[in-house]
Image (cartoon, rainbow, N blue to C red; front, side):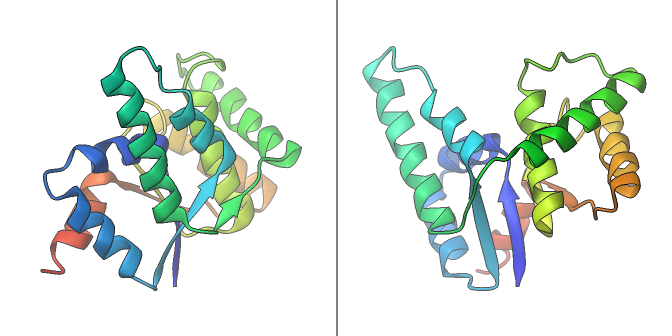
Length: 168
């Protein structure tokens, strides 16, 4: 069984796919592929601005997709996760990373910290500038080695699409 977590942006990308319903169906039917939800991810989806009717509908549909894909596999945030994420960030800054803690990188680092602490196998992301950046990946590997955690495999959105479009 593959235990995975999606970065927040994965839900938006899946939603925009022309075969989104088919992809969602294939993913939910795959009993060897378990997607975990995580409180900060759902909060980011919930915080999508409600300015227009269209964005409000999109927000509701994204939350629905998130709930369907994660089912009852939910992970809670903790001080341990936040502490590890902050260690990633501190090392990331030493490596020359230029994003501030109060940007989207905070949640990205929390996602990887959660996956590391909970022993998940894969983190999927479409974010090459933060979560998948070279300095971020170096910081996960360096800190996890020091803290005795296994860094999950970091895969791109295209890897997820390839996996489920090849099932045809």
